Length: 186
Image 1: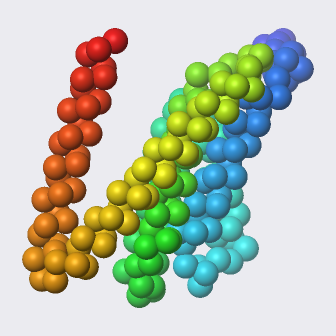
Image 2: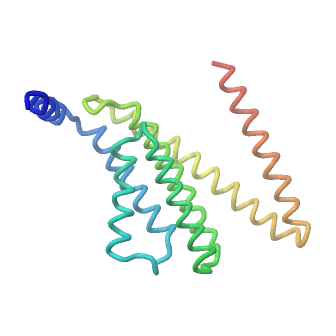
């Protein structure tokens, strides 16, 4: 009984020390993942039970961003998109694909930030603004590049898909080389 009282006292002490910024980052994770589920899944699967399950899955990465939960939520989101495309014959719309990809990246980025912030951290708002600006720049650059590659695929006729595949591989190799150079530069 004394151990239980000690745990409750420690939990109460930790809850009193929670600051607003780390809490808002975790709320951002929850909202981003939940909106990602709503975009990815087909409307036909939304029942009270499935919405409750998706809400619980959206809470998990917000509560445990250092654990396996962000990857689990990402897999559930991708699974929903695949279910909509293959199971319900929903056409693959470019806007929906870009939205799911952007929400996946934003959730991943917010989980990385939340994993670094202790609950009682006092954080300068500029740090959060810079973090979100970088994430927004990555999402924007990826969307523009994705749209250009889709346009190239349609412009080339039958050979367009092969051209886009080669261009995509070149972009992936180029970005990998750039990241490797940036890491070594430090």
